[in-house]
Amino acid sequence: MKIAFQGINGAYSEMALHHHFGKTAESMACDAFDDVFDAVNREEVTHGFIPVENTIAGTVVENYDLLFSHEVFVMAEAYLPIRHTLLGKRGARLADIREAFSHPHALKQCRTYLASKQIRMTPAYDTAGSAHIVSTGDRTDCAAIASELCAEIYDMEVLARDIQSNTSNTTRFFVIARKENIPEDLITEKTTVAFKTRHYPGALVDCLKIFQKYRLNLTKLESRPIPENPWEYVFYADAEGGMSQPEVKSAIGELTLHAVFVKLLGSYPKATRCW
Image (tube, rainbow, N blue to C red; front, side):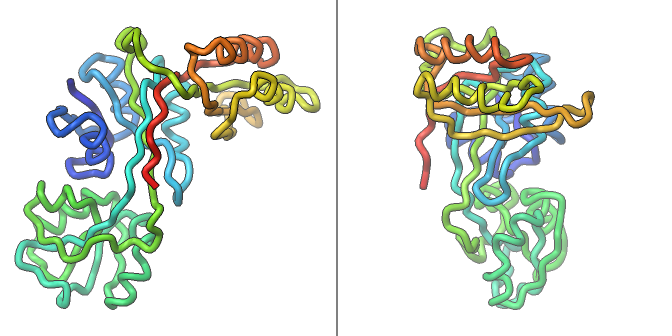
């Protein structure tokens, strides 16, 4: 089993990947989210592992757009609590740290802690990349905010743990695969679809009433622009219930009659929330 993720080794995505698949799973780092989807389609990997939503930063819209444009299937979801760690070079001391590097979101989430220690914030491309830069540099007065996995990978000193202000910070991930690689006995408890409504007053309401008719609870609904068609939108929806259930099949079937198009993005087991 080989799973692609975006980022470098030590990224939160890799940490979540190992939580979901186990530490024996082989991970493959990719520069961009597009590369994860391409690796799955070219069968360089068996699965892709992508973040789709964070409780603070919101939806990772790029990955929903990629799900819509690629022929892959969501076969699982996973959650990871984000616990930010302050990491320094081996031998560094917390009292000497004057500057912290990390992704802007991570810096914002740890602003209160850094201010209390009078540590200056410096934005960087990503969390794991910041750890790599600090670990290979020659400064002992700077640190990185990243996953604790980075301390193990880059042989760094853990200076402080759980420095984020929001203790419920959580990221949701999707496991994607080619449709022919989806197990036939996969348990399905949630379903994700994309659809485009027709142009008349109440078109969206008519589509949503279908989910109400079959008593399906929507846990997510979001619109995204269609780049090729200015001022037109596609809606993404998560519903509780799997395609193995007759009412879900009936609802999706009826939705195709009311919408311009419907694309089934995945039907998968419901992950246990971690908060």
